[in-house]
Length: 181
Image (cartoon, rainbow, N blue to C red; front, side, top):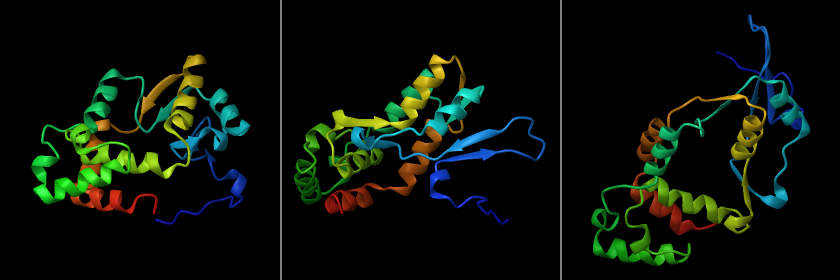
């Protein structure tokens, strides 16, 4: 299968219209960077116009489903302590690495690999957590104000399985060591 972008204009790169092939109404796909600093955050008017014209908002995960929210919270926690998965030397090293992220092994001991990986994402941004915005949440709030139906493409549990398979504990610790690199 070959896929070609019909428009290579960078201004069109975050919102794509899907039409044709028997569709009676266009649909839109918005590419986003999940989290950004407030000063860099902007939702283009064309994205908001597309949302206004749409009947539904389909997101990666349905953030209005309590079961999905519970699954997401579970994604960041594990029953098996990190310290039990590491040698005493590795645990000491991880504790030292976590200090650079403003936490320690004792606080993070029940975190999953995904929970640790979140630290990397948050540290990669040059602003404090209190000054971050999420595109998904902004779009969701607008959709809910307009009484649009909200759906999800995936289940949080499926994502959890994929992420935990992709990022084992040792790989995440290696990435934590690299810091902002």
